[in-house]
Length: 293
Image 1 (cartoon, rainbow, N blue to C red):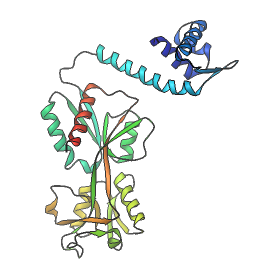
Image 2: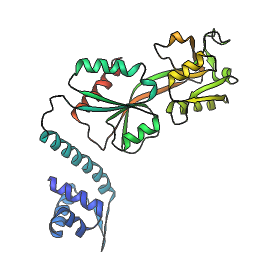
Image 3: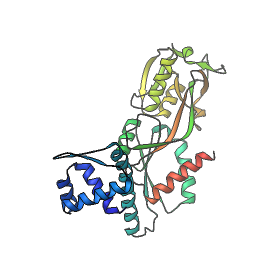
Image 4: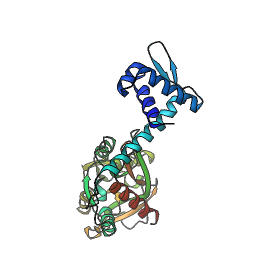
């Protein structure tokens, strides 16, 4: 099996026409036809159903195309890496993350990575979950730290850890002395939460629905620290992660006994876009970090 056979097959699978595929590959139609016939003979199964003017992929052809696309992408990535000059600075990694990571998790993670790989530079982008997923899908960022959500077909996501959510109340709130609460316990409390385009807000809404509770939302923000500050100002309660370093605000984090409120956090990337060596180094570092936590 030769690389040219795979390239001819990929072109034919895309245009579904022998003459047009041959023109695209700059070979004669007979040469392309012979190459694909030889490939089918080697695989022991037809890859196309031939018609008078068109050809359609068989079921086996569709499966084979998936693997051919991957092989040719990896080959192109290998060529670029080998041909590219060595970079003294180790390269740049574009990392996106959602807002609640900025205050506590990411600084610690980046400091540890920089200590091990000072030659690699990290460019950061912070935004809401839907925007970040669009960036990953369009190849605008290398890696994204995010929770699970509806993924596009070309987005891969790997679980890292689960983050527990708590009901945050002012320290002198009537519920502050409780060991735990349910979401029904705060149904009559004014709720301070994130805007609907955040995955954390989606999880909060789903949890309230599961508890058959319908709180009154009085504020929708963009930042978890802002929510915590408003809770400390006694404007309402919120459901947020326990963020280290803001205990001085005077809020209490209450575990939620029902329903269980946790969000899965992972790392996402575009599997149609090969990761650079620097991005691959950061990806493996993050995965190893949480695997040993």
